[in-house]
Amino acid sequence: MNCPKCKNPIEDNAAFCQWCGAVVDNSVIENQENDFEYVIKNMLTNTKYDDVVQYYKETTGKNTEESKYEVSRLDYFRTHEFADETAWQKYYEEYQENRKSIDNSIQIIGWILFIIIAIFLAIGIIVSVLSGFRII
Ligand SMILES: [Zn+2]
Image (tube, rainbow, N blue to C red; front, top):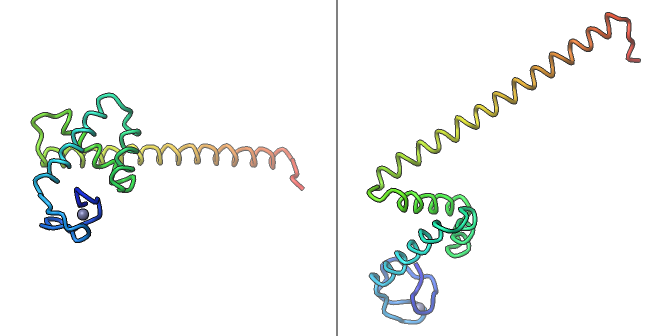
């Protein structure tokens, strides 16, 4: 976490800031974090998902994957009023599974196309050879 006064990084649950000596009230910091979650949830109602992720990334300094995860998580809690962590984890795992099966389907379609093209090429070569066509 960061010092609420000088914004330098300090240890979690530190009572004083090691940089400026300010007394750190952890409940204030917790509220600031909740305010940030509130801002993100609010943004999600009227801003494109990718733009919210970008904003989250720039504000927190987290990487794209982490930011996507956190924004998706906040979006889930925003749209599911009575959801808890267990429900979110279940939803996220199912989402990951679906993504994986879509990726697999795309891969299978790719292979089928490749085989069809290979068969046509083979037929073309066989027909050419049988009809006396010389490549060289
Ligand atoms: Zn400080």
